[in-house]
Amino acid sequence: MTGVIVPDDLPLSRAGVDRAALSRTDDGFVAAALTDDATRVLLVCDGAVVTTTGSRVALLPPSEVRVPASDDDGWLLLGRGEDGETYLALRVPDRRPAPRVGEASDVLVHAVPTEVGPPTASGLPDGLTWTPLRDIGADLTAHEAGLATTAVALDAWHARHPRCPRCGARTRVAQSGWTRVCVDDGSEHYPRTDPAVIMAVVDADDRILLGHAAHWPAGRWSTLAGFVEAGESLEHAVRREVAEETGVLVGEVSYRGSQPWPFPASLMIGFRAHALSTDVTVDGVELTEARWFSRDELAEAVRSGDVIPPGRASIARALVEEWFGGTLS
Ligand SMILES: [Zn+2]
Image 1 (cartoon, rainbow, N blue to C red):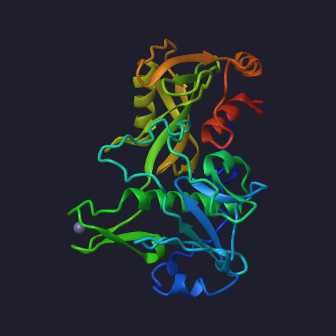
Image 2 (image 1 turned 60 degrees about the horizontal axis):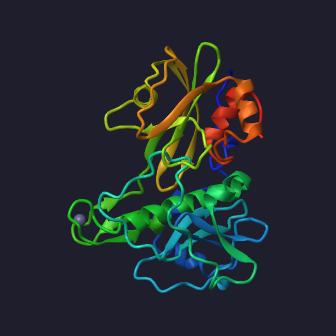
């Protein structure tokens, strides 16, 4: 094993856009961009973006975008292209009720089904449709991924943070969609990212440990993963999660790559983890099954359909295939 999985090689990790961070504080920047027909607009709602029939992200001139009525500023400055053109996203109000206090978070983030889909294609011009970013993530260019991932992440943050965490008052959008400011106490709030570790656990015989979570479809097996707890290092989080979910003890841990996973706010930080023990005891809550696979066993299980590997857009798939030494078909 040499080097790391180059982050730019991972779907959704490719950084193909100048984020134009210095322009965010220019109050008139978005308004000026909307008068420039070279500007391109991406529509975003609840984890989905508008795409063309060819599954490309639709990038529309401002003149083709109808701005829906909203009491919030729905424009997000995504960045600038190579020719100086500006990329914006427009948040389309979704039909989902506001999140409840204590709503469950996206814990086993790489395979949680989306409970509420994006709005239907009604209201979109012919040839355009809403597509969940998860479904097309593996096929996007670096440029499209940079735009769509940022738009989905920012949209999810705005949707979940309408109020000030200090005093409960309403917040308003500022800095071209990159902050919210409390209308009462003036405090500034920034988009949050929740770090999660995800790991290919490998034993002394070079077998990989995969698990099946309670809420996954039958046959889905993947790497273990979990959120980093407050006050915890990444390495400790890897060892703790593996021990909690399977009883396996982990020694050496090495970084392999990372992937933004904005469903709604995760950063997946990928590791290879070397097991010091092999007895598996699942917790029965998060994981209902876990077992070791040799390469031959995994290849045969995938071929027969007994194992459905993680989705192609996920870092879980990349970690498994890096260990496997090739593509899992
Ligand atoms: Zn406040």
